[in-house]
Each structure stands twice: as C-alpha cells, then as structure tokens.
Image (tube, rainbow, N blue to C red; front, side):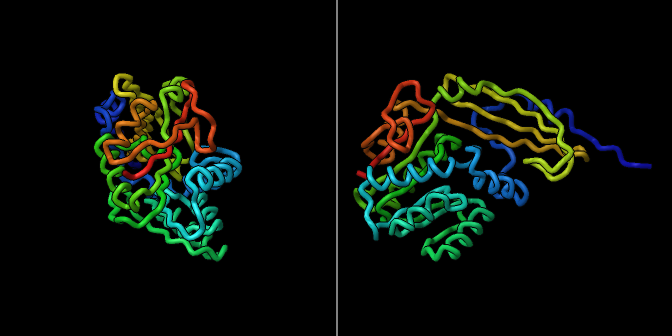
Length: 286
C-alpha cells in the first residue's frame, strides 16, 4: 500500500485570498540552500535582469556613481544587498575601500572567492542588513536594484536610519526604487504551471501557483508564489513591493535624516521623466 500525498486545501484556499499588506511568507527565502543557488545563477546570467542588471549597465552605473558622488581612491563605501559582488568588485578596482553585506551565504561565498581570485581587498559580511550596527564608517552607501521596496514601511525606516548612522557626516547614499509604472506594464500575474524538476523553487516535481495582488491606495504590490511539492507540502513565497514617486520617496528619506540631492530615471544619469518605471536617487547625510 502506498501513501497518498495529502494537500491542506483549507490552507491553500487561505493563501489564495489577498493577504494583509506585508504579511510575510516563507522566512527562509534568500538563504534557502536550493533557491539561493538559482538566485546566484540569475545574478551571474549576463543575458537577463532577473536578479541583477546586465554587465554593461553595471559598468555604466559604477562609472556614473564615481562621477556624480565625486568618489576618490581611498574612500570607503558599503554596498547593502551586494549579492555576488558585481558592483563591489568594480568599485574596489577603482581604489575604494569596499564592504559588501548580503543575506545569502552562497552569494557571499562566491563574492569572497572572486575577490581572492582578483586579489581585491574587499570585506564581505553574511548579514541581514536590517541588523547593521556600523557607525560613522563610510563615505558612501549603496542600496541598488530596488532593495528598499520589498520592505514594510517600518523596516524601511529601520534600514534607512541604520544607513544614516553608518555614514560619516556628509556621507552620500545612492539607491533606486520602482514606480507604479512598472506595475502598469507587468500587470497582475495569475497563472500556474507544473515542473518535473529541477525548477527555480524546488529540485523535485512541483506545481507553482502565481498570484498578483494590488493595493493601489498604498502603492503596494504583492507577487506571490504557492509551491506544492509531490508529497503535498505547500510553501508560500511573497515578494512585496512598495512603489514610489519623487514626491513620496523624498519625505521617507528626509525623515531618516537625508537630503535628496538628485533624481533620475535610473542610476546611469538619465534625466527624470514622469513615465519612468524606476527612480534613481542621490541623497546625503545631514
């Protein structure tokens, strides 16, 4: 007699309903041993922007940041959510003292290995940047590819205050955030598919139910994946996004003690236009 997989239909039904804003899903996500391997592959894929921007864009971004912030060799910089070190390695090659922080052990291990191969003196830390305790250490800080947007408003305030504390007086802060225009283009994705494995979420056979939920009155969007394995186990993964406009991101940064010094469509210096899907920002510690 074989065991028949059992699926908790009540729980599945609950998960398919629109949840309260910023209700968490599976906590072991970015550092999941299997998913982090897929994420690293996505970071390193030069033909997609699923996890990181393409190498030519990264190169342009680094050149732009060096110029717009007036960074000089010997200055210190921290990259929060550094992933496998795609920005940090380039910045270190330009003579900066660089620290990278990421909550994926696999990405940090890769970054350390690459730094050793390239003989770059970079400090990498496996750490949740919401626990950052550094104080008055850095001339500049980076939070790139919308890393602020998945956080709840409370966690955003927490992180921004920690970044402010980590910077030296007058230190500069570069970040980018998404706008509602990106939701208008992508729309609400409600679909499902079956994978024989391996897939992005699991190594074995599984079903993926994808739901998009919009909270337009809060400029918030949820991209949710319910992953059901062959034995009936189900896991919900939630990617939240809090979108911004220049008018709404400015008070958030000012409330954490930053003055906004520049607004662009991206982090390569494209002039700002209202129809942009991204906003690149330069702020300064007051």
